[in-house]
Amino acid sequence: MSQRGEGRSGGEMSRVPAVRFAPEGVLFRRAMARLDQGACEARDLAVEMFGIRGGPPGLADQLVAEVLEGAPDVVREGPDGAVWRLARCEAKRAEKRRDGLHQLRYAVVDVETNGGVAGAGGRVVEIAIVEVDRGEIGDCFSTLVDAGVAIPPWITRLTGIRTEMTCGAPSFSQICDQVRERLSGRVFVAHNAGYDWGFLRAEMRRAGAAVPRGPRLCTVHLARRLLPGLDRRGLDAVADYYGIEIRERHRARGDAVATARILVRMLADAERRGWTTWPALRRALARPSRRKRPPDASGPPDESHTGGKTTDHG
Image 1 (tube, rainbow, N blue to C red):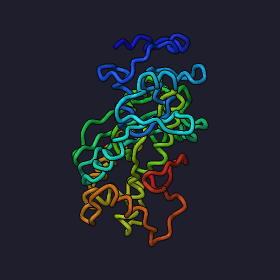
Image 2 (tube, helix red, strand yellow):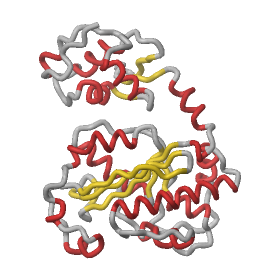
Image 3 (cartoon, rainbow, N blue to C red):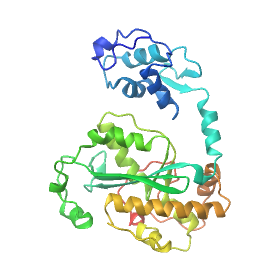
Image 4 (cartoon, one colour):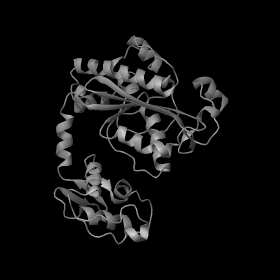
């Protein structure tokens, strides 16, 4: 069936013919890939499927409905019918969560910033994403990012990143699709995950992209459970405990690779404690700590924080 109208302007796209659930259609495949990650609002699906942002009221609902209405296993929910999900999605995710921790797929992330607050002047100036699959460290994506902002001297002293180094680097909008693809279907991991996630979420929203959904895991919080004897849980302290060398400290690639190596060791320690599945790990991390939490404590693995880097981050 025809899928004419993909990529046209909002006025033309409002007349896209109903393609229903043609399994060979690229729009349908895009929608199913996104819904396989969880429920999604029509406006976010429209970005994923058609690449449109904004437009006349109701346009996103109309376009998405023309592609998905009547498709098997696709359910429309919400008071205005603007939320779509796969009926089988919850069962599929539950089955995946029963896998051992080492069977899950992780994306270990580190961002360097200009020192501001996420969503309020703070910008990502470097990012690295390391893939961890079945306990093995895989590819690493890393790049400087031209955010169009000056990098303060104190950030340069800490990271070595100067403003002129980012000139000519891609903007976040240019790498946004790559970042989303590398995060898709994986557990988001970072050392002080709320900080890194907060900046990525702000950058994606600024780029007009749909923010990926999925579980998140903070290795600072995990260190508090697994390594209660450590006085500090900053990246340097945890890496030293596991005998891991950090190359290029305070650069995204160096910190992300070190965090990935730490994650592999931590997952092994967690499984030795009997926390062998994602639900078991969640329950262990949710239990009240016997020690008083420091004021910079990050929250449970699925919580989102937007504060600055803490002393636990190192």
